[in-house]
Length: 314
Image (cartoon, rainbow, N blue to C red; front, side, top):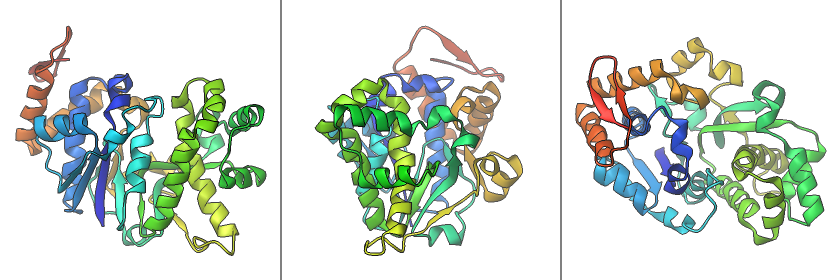
């Protein structure tokens, strides 16, 4: 199984870097994500754009087995669609893989039942548990109805059975790359089809719709294909590393799985930031220094002071 990461720089440089305590911590997370995963999956692939390759490979010295700049194809797309790079990377995979977000650390190899799965993700996300703010498909329904946009067939069907579940894609992969390509192409078409432009524009911020396009549509595709006895993907089954969102963020179950995902506000936690710095400095000192040097090549006004004394520009 190949390990894959993606980095579309346009959303990051357009404001998503603010999700991190500092730019330095974002780069340290990349180091730890790659280095922990490649202990178990030595074949590693980065799908990025030219700017991403310059940052991660040339400047920070991250050593991927393969580097693709296919995401240059997204240069003209709206950065509000922040996960387009992931979808594009999914669509290009021809062999079993696991896509790993750069804020995910695999301390252990994924279990065999996951590696052998048709398709897998981190955990299911049920709307009452995850919060309605992340998933509001009824707003999309209304917008597309009013503007005449084209909703995917899987979406239509899924909405009719009233299932309120998405899939957390901190990790996504599987053996059935044909199905994963089908899903990713549907999602890309959903977001980018010119006939849908008015509908998305009427909804405002695309960033808040991206979870639906990536994660809700994935659940819809799996369930729709399973219900369609004539589909080539009828036998595809979804499996999870964790059975629920609460299990995924339970420290004991996460420790047993050897899995860390720095979701949402964890990226801004001073405690977690210090632990991230100390781990990379201890285990990957050369990468640590290159991260400091890489940030200091583009100094800004403020500085960050580590509790143990070292300082770098932010």
